[in-house]
Image 1 (cartoon, chains in turn green, yellow):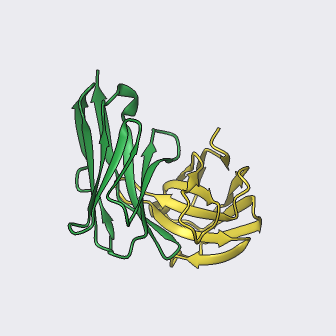
Image 2 (spheres, chains in turn brown, red):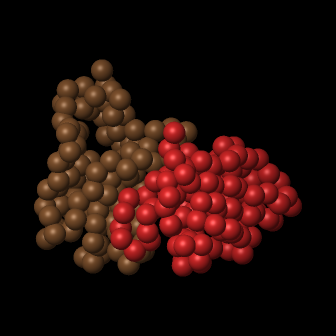
Length: 110
Length: 114
């Protein structure tokens, strides 16, 4: 039972434009949601998180939005840069466990 | 430098071999994890240790055997693996298993079972 889903395996965006990565979840008990970024041959690195009691969290070019009624969260990257090209994983945290999506590969074209 | 170091980076082993994956964290964290990443699948939790005690075994086959001698070191002992066990094995740590603090991952061991 996959509790966190990323339905878009890939996304291509022009440099300078906005990248929007989406994530859906089924477990309404998640306490936190996190986004991780992964380059090839490296482990995932933490990017940004949001508490389930918030609807928005911003850190520089990265903003995460949470829509609890729709059980949906999204990561906005503005402006997108070629160095943002990576696989992005969303995760939900509940009862001492992290549940990850399958990732979205972002390609930012120069 | 990720603060979580995994060795080896790559491993090729036959189905009858015995090998071990090693993970060391330099972050002073109390919780350590093993995850498996197969192509185009979610990261799959295998084991969790909190203060050296195993708190989670996510129905992992017994051919995978974890060991946590202290809060800084984590091993995954492998024996009689199957080709479908080929994957990227990621070690992670966090301050505590119960506070939702972000996981810090190592760069992983790419395992190929022949």
